[in-house]
Image (cartoon, rainbow, N blue to C red):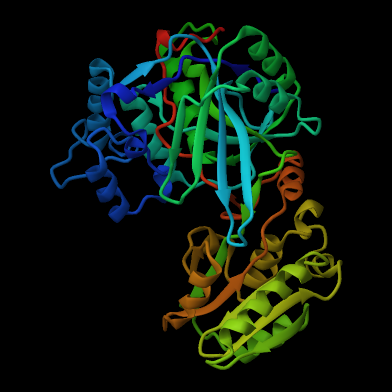
Length: 451
């Protein structure tokens, strides 16, 4: 189960860098080249130079963005730009954000170290991973002997005991960090270092299972790094810094947890015929049409999306837009046993009620003939986050279909993970993303693994 350890986090020194807003960055895997350039220009000590440094045509093994990241990290530590906290702590972290409907939410959690364990031994993945990102993050970890970004994990605590302990400890105190990111999200950090609170949190988390919400690649990378370091060391106690990883822990039973859907754009399918495809869909789905004109598109789209969400509360429902057709389609499974009739026992029960499983297995594989390998390689797939971006993708001649999904429910994530399975890629988008640069974890003796 979860073994939580306070640590001496490495934080930016405001006296050295000035405005902390200027040294933070989004997670490395959502940063575009344009955004990378912008962050480089924003501040010479922006965390981008460590988590996602630029490459050059002259790069060679050992003289590349990873070696430059290590050099910058060492330089900034030496100059006091970054520094270890004085005492081991857990870092209470809140993110306050506003949704499109104007409602304001606050997601709460805390940052600490967690002992690395293999999947299934108290920690559960929920999505498949790819090899490329793991190789990249391993090179960075090897070069810097540190981990720079938190693994985002969920735990279940219906009585909110951990939240209450941490909120009690920070009551009346100003945050150590208060920054607003480029999406307008307020990120606040409080240091919690009193022994009574730390002991209470550690004890409360002892029986908790952890579910990775974001950071699967980085967790597997940390396991690989740990194993490499153990082999290199020969003799090890299990308490060396590389046996632990920095995590953000958030209670899935608390308010403020938002999951967005990730939509699918299908392109370049050979021999695709829209009418034949719709006919096959009608064998398994009830299909409703929402036709529109140029003048009525905005209103029809709004109605269609509301109906998609409403229908999804009762049964698996998918939104569909076909290129060159002024129609939105709402596909709702005809009955709860549709997946049983088509696949029998070949798909685990816990998957059969998931929108993404119905889409990938029934629509993509069975109806469109897209193999599992092709889907994993994204040969004919593009993933997009917003409804507007997905729908506008149909203006591209190469794109043939757009599928709009409802968000995966937190209970579904938990059920799949507990059953020992993983969801298809891009099944969830936990919002907001964690900000990079708030805390760093160096694998050195100063981290102090005991409070």
